Length: 399
Image 1 (cartoon, rainbow, N blue to C red):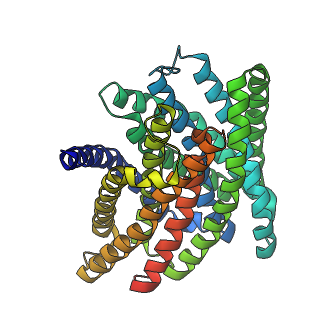
Image 2: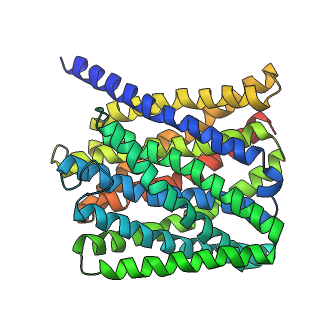
């Protein structure tokens, strides 16, 4: 009977994970945008380094949002709607606006050391970083909420569906915003930077006013305090990812088949950790599972179902990218499939364990794991995915 129950749960998690991760196919659009604008994205060493940083901000901020929103839906403290929601939901949205600015500042600060080593000026990076993340967030937040609510009302578990949906929407939107602002910078030069900088100042001033209006809200203060710590950790990891991506871009030069799958790879790896972490935080909040690392065995069914779905999606990404940019060369397809399988096994399973351990450690210390799990695992997932991808490229020689 227990085996039947586990098998049924495995199939349920696998099916919902596969449906949710299938949304990551949208990440191929982001990858295609990068692959067809490589000259623009690789305008300078810091512009290619900045791309995973921007995507990771998306993952970090989006993780705070979906973690709290999915748990709030389960507990009833938030409603499945965009407008007319609860005060807790409004606290969450305003805190995200503030965290977006804080994350940009952290990332830029830690990037200063890398920029100095490269001999690059730091101001253009800061302006484009804040501009891209701010413009992207204004479009991502309402779009993601609408799609998540649509799935929730149709029976999808928000712990499984929320982050994959949000992250894919965000990847596409933030990539479009980044390429657009890079184009403005490339065409208009200093004038372009001034225009983008003016938008940055307007956004920041608006955020300050909104944050001042919520300063006495306990939920808002808690999310800001706890998530800022997570952002600090994520910022360090993100800069490691950026340096790794510079190395990848140099190793494979202009192999578009890799750049097309890159956003989907880091997206799906982060989604695996997010799904496992979100299911665990809900079970902890409801008292269904004890906060002990030894209980990871009780999550093997969920971890296994989520991982298998991710392994299948990695191969799907490879097939689509090969069809678009691989020249229909069968040797390229074989190497690409092996490379993606190796990347998946290395990164996805590791990030599931990271998400579990992070949730348990934060919960046992009296912190809200929803403020830490997805932000930290998504940033680490980007680094793990990028490192695993670089290792696989060197192993199979696709570049």
